[in-house]
Amino acid sequence: MTTEDDSSTSVQTSTTNLIFDETDILYEEDCLRNQYSVKAWLRYIDHIKEGPNEKINLVYERALRELPGSYKLWSNYLKLRRKQVRSKCIIDPIYEEVNNTFERSLVFMHKMPRIWLDYCQCLMDQCKITRTRRVFDRAIRALPITQHNRIWSLYIKFVTSYPEIPDTAMRVYKRYLKLQPECAEEYIDYLKEIGHLDECAKLYVDILNRDNFTSRQGKSNHQLWNELCELVSKNPTKIKSVQVEPILRQGILKYKDQVGQLWTSLADYYIRSGCFEKARDIFEEAVESVLTVRDFTQVFDAYAQSEEGLISALMNKSNEDDEEITEDDDLELELRLARLEYLMDRRPLMLNSVLLRQNPHNVNEWLKRIKLYGEQYDKIIQTFTKAVQTIDPKICTGKLQDLWIAFAQFYDKYQQPDEARYIYDKAIKVNFRNVDDLAAVWCAWCEMELEHEKPDEAIKLMERATILPRHKVIYLFFINRL
Image (tube, rainbow, N blue to C red; front, side, top):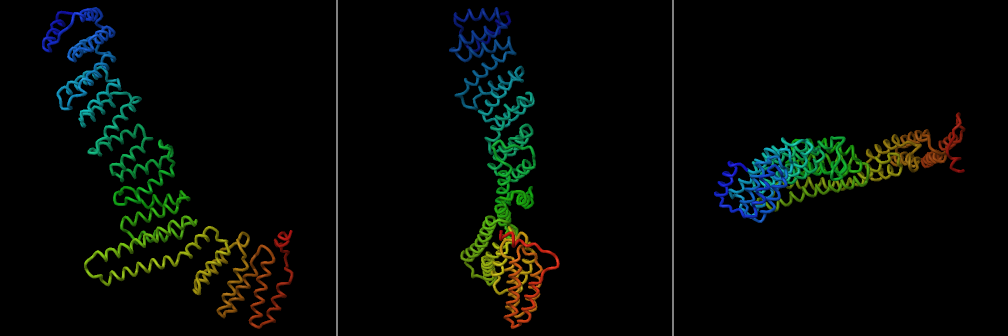
């Protein structure tokens, strides 16, 4: 060692009152002969590891002065310095000395991610938020992109551990997603946790619009869509940047097995927004468009529950107010009760409509619908007319001739035989699937004429029914007999 170094060492030794043992001389001489040997310095450090901290630190400083590019020396030294301050208060000045040591190490070790991570962790332990964030940013700028994932995991853990800085955490997360877009679900969970649901909804829309997105949590697009629908429907006041109704309607068209739930979510969105009339319109549209009994039951139950909830809220409001109930309040309550009663009365017809949407060629369901109308003349006529225009004789379910006969008998019941004859005349021109169906229509027509005491007309009808057609007609009657 040179004279200058000796004087420097003696000065440092005198200032820190360090005492070197005789056993240190051998290691000192070894380090003087091999001052650029890492092993020589490590042997010396291992020899004095039980000594005072100041002495070990001094030897490390001397070694690093000779070998500033040794990762092993820097790593061991920094671990030692952190260990030495572990039991200290975070406001102790010695922490700043450790921070300065990290800064000096990064002059040479700025490409080593382990040094950056240890430095960031040390600053996190000191609760230095701004300084820690800046060091993380420096690490990302200094390291190659292939090693960024090591920094980001700790960086995200740091920013999410402080609920006082949500805006900073969101900006950091957005930068992180540019490198790891598949981690969007972690960001979604964090946004839900801090209550930034508007940003959360936008991120849901973004990942659902990506064709190549793969969930790390093993969720399908269907599950993600359901989560989005639940989020937007239950938080209408917090979500402003996303158009809720188009999203839910798109889901209704896309996911046929979730139609009832999506319609209910859309109506629930308007209920929570205070738009009760709009919610009622959504419910009405839903019950008129669903195709399964399960979806209808789900929508109808939610519809009835919402109406009951409005009535209960109005009654509770009236009971809580000390003032007398006004005439307008009574009128509104009666109106809501009437709406609920009307809704419950319409349930059989609504359910029948669902079954007819499933199979519009079901004769039995058309006949049930006619019975549900009771004595409503106009409705029955409209239903009969729509039924005979809709049903295809080749694929119908049930006895089509019964529908035509019931249509004619309905007119006959109301003393309109001419209209009944017109219906029978239309019925005999229908291409029934077998000859027995056509024969039943002819027989019913003849029986009506006999009831009106017109046997001559009945005989003429029988003659028309038994005349051979001009063109050969093949009925399925003979096939059915085989």
